[in-house]
Image (cartoon, rainbow, N blue to C red; front, top):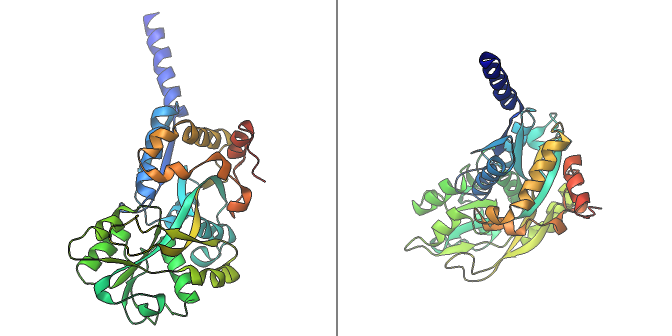
Length: 316
């Protein structure tokens, strides 16, 4: 009888282990916003959702995240809307390799930072010609949007600038060391690495306006981009509000994720929003009211729609 009880208990533990849902959260570089937000999400899913275990992974950003989702493995990824649209369409970085992606949540707007320091003399997009400029790390949506902005400004990123491909943290260090003159970074507010640059002794940060390029970008790539502002209080030393191009951030998964799993993830975000805000303030911008089909080029996952319906949220 005792042996039978031990056998039953052993099988129970094996069954529980087999039922555990192991999720990987594809984020971005350590100096950005996706990484702390992804770490917070992994913590909430692991501690608040029974049977679910999640870990956050450092990645190159949106493009890398979407490719990881394309493997069909249980990934949840942070992505910019433009990169996700490219993935589902099988174009640009995903040429001839479309990925079946679904939206779980619309997160917050990603704001383009074109950052430099006063000593470079750079004040406009046109001033970037001939300069040493980082367009973002390989595998990032920063790189995608940087190319589109430069193109809209009449600058060829392969010929008219001396291009580097650095993460936001690497870019800041390169500016400090006078190895580059400016860098592109698209992210939430505030971005830790940009704050680091703004607080560096002997350097005065300069943020370049990019709203004039928005109409040309939308004409070519679809209505994905919109003008907004980085308030001058965001980073120490900003002389004025920064008028910038922006794009939506979305939380995405492979279409093969079960409805139940998708539902649990979305529910966990809204049930534990205060815990998530403690990991990064951009979680304050994640609201049920913002979950609208018109705000994402990628259709919602049925599991997410089930949760929204329970909360009487109409996405259309």
